[in-house]
Amino acid sequence: MVEAQGNRNRQIFKADECTRCGICFNECPEMHLPIEIAKNEVMRLIHGQESEYVLKHCTSCFSCNLLCPYDCKPYQLILENWNKQYTERGSPALNRFVCPTEKNNVWEMLFQLAPKFERDQVKMWMRTPPKNTILLVGNYTHLMSFIISGSELLDHFTVVDLLDNWECGAYPYQLGYLDLVERIGKQCKSDFDEAGVKTIVTFLDAVEHMLNEVHPNEMGIKFNQKVVNFNTWLLEMIEEGKINMPNRVNMKVTVHDNCYSKSGVYDGISYWDLARKVIKQTGCEIVEMEHNRKTALCCGFGAGCSWTTGHAFNIPFDMMSVAEVKFQEAIATGADALVTYCGGCLYLMWAARELLEYDIDIYHHIELVRIAMGENIDTLQKRHKERAWDLIAIIANVMLKSIFSKNFKVTETKFSIRDKKKWGKKPYLGLRFIRFCLKPKFMKDLFRKVFRQLMKRYTTKLEIPQ
Image (cartoon, rainbow, N blue to C red):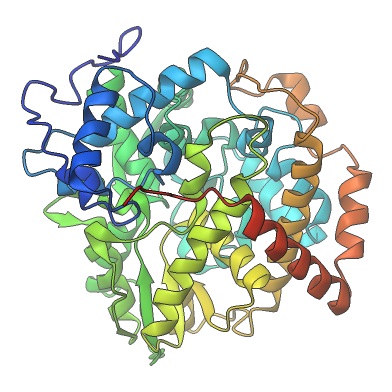
């Protein structure tokens, strides 16, 4: 069996209690493997053998943990096998895109494309020293910071944007880079303790799960700070009359449940129900997609976890292929808008909406709260569309560079003093040229057409023998 390395808990996957029934992968909303194949895949993963399907098509969505009738945590079995692969072969060059301490990461590249007022905002968040009660904005909220910047909601906190905290390891965890997550966890604990942080309010559910569950129970790292979910705080403030929402939004919306929404129940309520309570407070009517809550489909981002061989040129096409199914389900509900409560899902779905030309608005649920509060936000979503094309340009730039690059392993998890001084100063002329080319409508249309043709060719197909 694939075992954890170092100090990590080897018993998260309950091998002794697993009956090898295969239900976890048979009922997986993404793969639906035939039962005998599912059983065989479980056996292969337990013995650390090459997987034919799961490691190549899993979207890292946590559903298998909820579907297992014996609570054996098969998701952790997948992660341990991915960690073994990362240890042996590294990560594809394309994944530098989501590593804040690596060159050509999305945050530094976006800094060159964002308007000055937005650059000033994120710089302020990044330079604010953490102390007492902090709100962790998070790496992916950073990419569309306008959804929350300028809101009265932020007046209650010291707002910090700690890019080299890696969302406390949340997205490397989904990639299965567990040894890296352990390093990040130790770094985060040291940073928070040294800064005298007492309370951490997490804008992202995933970060709360990492701090309360993954790090103490899987990595042996216990945080001394009180951890509060932003939605929990928000509902309490609404119930106490400290936040008022006089304007009813009156939209019919469908809710995208992110992968970490399936990670557990805290204070007697699941993340997916917590978010829905907030959304209902704004006056929205919720209509559910076919797959929701424990069987919710991935936004597409998780498809990048299961790359197979080579330079992983297929990853963006796999992501968009998964996102396509999500949009089809959302539109089938007849909803006015698709609502997410995850910053990572938000940016991915906006990029997919623009590339695949789906005619449905997308909101972060906090944007609905701000509308209900009477705050002035971009309801025409012009900034969202522009940001989507910024991100598409960045992805195109990284794809081109990755073709000629080797796999890598993350060596540094924290910014050095030199890194901080240089951050955001690289001009990225090639990126700027790509973004300039994607300004005219006819160039956007041409890019979409080419991307879709490549998507047909390079998307990883799940082919199961009949």
